[in-house]
Image (cartoon, rainbow, N blue to C red):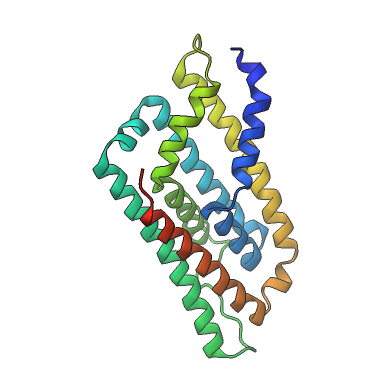
Length: 216
């Protein structure tokens, strides 16, 4: 199997996987809609950093240990589900506070998205959502070996493929964030924002509950 010959299939698979609805898509769309394109950039980078680390863990065999360990799997599942539930409840609370404050008043996050603290917070949220997902470990173990030729070094090849995946996903997610961000003024209208917070909160909570209920 030639590595170069498998790259088109690898990229096509990455595009299809990235386009599927999930926590990453929900986080990016909510942040881009409410705070604009620039605010979504650290979220995307945090998610992709977590993805790349999982790829390296898979190549090093650590992801296999996590997938095989019942305790590690449960801990990651609980942490990941708990964090998604936290983000969902937070969005719901924002929607409720906005409703209580009145339609003429728009609530803002106390941490500016352009500040270093706001940037690191968004980056951290993305990284935690990805790293605390045990399904990411299982996915890397099942996905990458299909594209690593037997005559190539596993770790170096997996790291290269993961870098390609990160580049593809960053391009896709930033494009999505740019499209959503262009309609940011409409999304940030108090009534629309309140509904978006309620909907995104519901989606995040549903994803958290699904992750909590999942088995191997």
